[in-house]
Image (cartoon, rainbow, N blue to C red; front, side):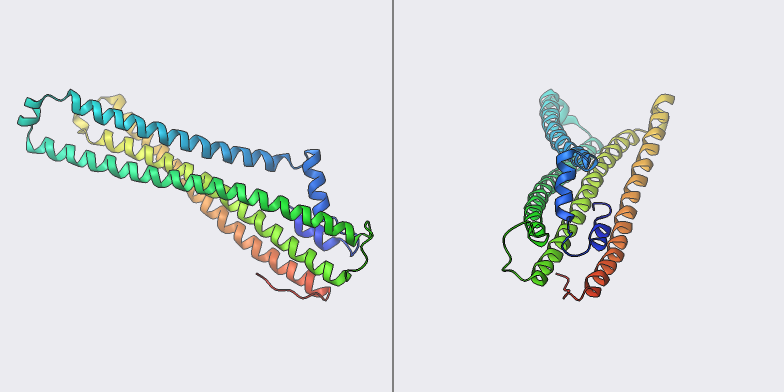
Length: 259
């Protein structure tokens, strides 16, 4: 959510409203560059995630194909029951991994589409808000519309703008969480592969590598927990802002309905 949007609205008296106009000025002058950079970072994450999922799927297909081709028929015929069971479990794990990767890829595509839609809706709202504020400031020749009705419309636009900004912020958190989920899945998969070998057959460096993977996994889990806490804190803050905004609107004698 844009910082200070509530304060901008609450502090400006009628006929001096410039909430949407100031947003346009900030973007044109590059003042709101940090938000744009964050959006670019998120889009980069989503793009990189899609590319990585595609490469991993292609590599896995090649690996499966080459493994089948390289195994002689005589070896397949004399393969023990334990080997057959192990390979079956590995194949099940591979298929499960592919399904999980595909689900994350679909979620990444959905988040990107939603972010693009939010950006378009925000720009459209801004255009409406700028035009409306010009009328309220008396900068046009249109005196036929009741000012109370115009202010009522303006309040609704601000509410919708804030709602979109909040949704955009949540989508960005979801994108970061998705990347962490993918990283955790990759690390856990690598750890399972390492642990399939008995400790007595591993070198000292391999055992250290396992511990390093465990540490990495715990760090990723901690980051994911922080994102969940951040999202919850953000929602609690938004509820408090909504109450303040409702009081501001009602104190000026305007009708108020959350939609």
